[in-house]
Length: 283
Image (cartoon, rainbow, N blue to C red; front, top):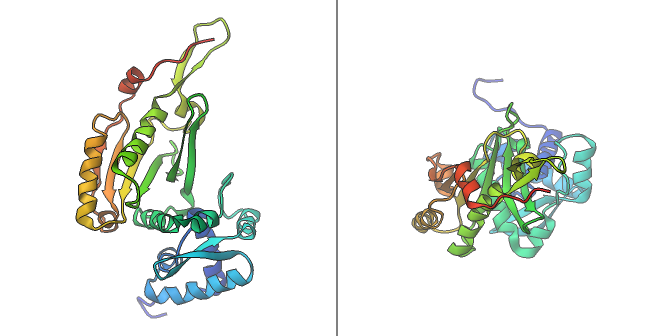
């Protein structure tokens, strides 16, 4: 092969990689898939289009809507089962196919989440991502879904949380969603045998991110509007969450895609969280 010439991907490999990618991000278009599957851009789309047509004929993938002119692809239940049976991905309990979200009109948001994942280096760590990850504390009634979670296979199981605002929610609602992470991080649970003094521990450290030393950093990505409007939204969010006691970084999708730095608008402060949230009563 001549120096610098790219190899042509086999049809079987493109199909397998497309299944694996959809198993991770749930929703993607042929515009996005070559960034992960073929190492090519426009030329790679023809390979992916053929692969997706073949997967649809096999009943493993389907389209339920469009993002602009691009059909949005997702796995079918049969496609998910094929991935699970082949041990292609780490176990993903209660993971949906994404079809319901597309049919309900959330396809453009899901496509933007995929763009965010790809911009953050999704090709390198694709199988370490999960989307629509629920965070809930039954005792307080707090429950929210994180758009994407990256859990790197390091010794400390480094975790990053991602929220994508596609310009469809109010500024107040966006700020509330960010503050929900502090409420989640601030909740503590009491542990100890009956009749003993016992102690309290962060709920997240005992029941969710058990190998993490600090609460995972939250990354907020702003998209869906002209860039100058996104910059205004970024500044407004920084003002709305001033003093928050979890680590929060924010960026716009265009800046992230260009490799520009994040803005830090929140700092992890477990002592301040403990002061803000009441201690649970022992038994």
